[in-house]
Amino acid sequence: LTLFWAFRPGRPAPPVSSLSPPASLRGWPIPGRILGPLWRAGLPPSADWLAGRPDVFHSTSFLTPSVRRSALVQTVHDLAGFRLPEIAKDPASTKEWGRLLRRARFLVTVSKFTRTELETLIAPPLPPIRVVPHGVDARKFRPLSNSEISHVLQHHGLSQGEYLLSVSTLHPRKNPLRLLEAWKRLPEPRPRLVWVGRPGWKDAGIPEAFRAGGILWLR
Image (cartoon, rainbow, N blue to C red; front, side, top):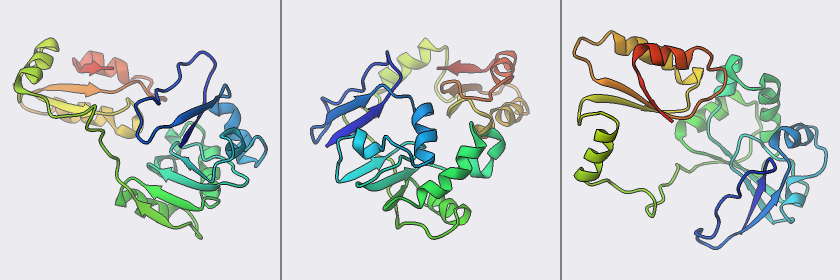
């Protein structure tokens, strides 16, 4: 098992020592913003060449790679760019992504909903599709004890059962301003609204609205 990693120079390498089965890391200091246009045009370097010519190349990002000899398996997380092209980073590349998906040998979706979206929005023929939900690493994630929960809540000035939690990138497609509007309509005393997630793109005005509304934003 080899993990291929295209990265911006200076970024730390992802940890692979704890993976099971054991994996090696093959990285190239080539940002996705450079590889993306090359792969959409079918130009070298191909992803399987960069990765050491594996039998199967499994892509889990929205950047569908160009491969020459390896069988391509592409995971599709969502098709928000097709439903809401106005909030896509690059609407032109999003449209081209549908054509690239048809190059894959096999497609994996993380939910039945995404599979339905894929079959609805992308013109056939499509490769075979399998739904494989996201897994949870039990070595890192576990239910917290009551004392651990109390410690975290106290650290952020919260009380058990008296807050509303949203976990998401701060991005227009997550509809944070509508959530803020709905929360403001709750009768007093209303629970604290907590948003957990990193900044996204095209989020102008959203952080300011959160601060003005007294929302607890944890990044």
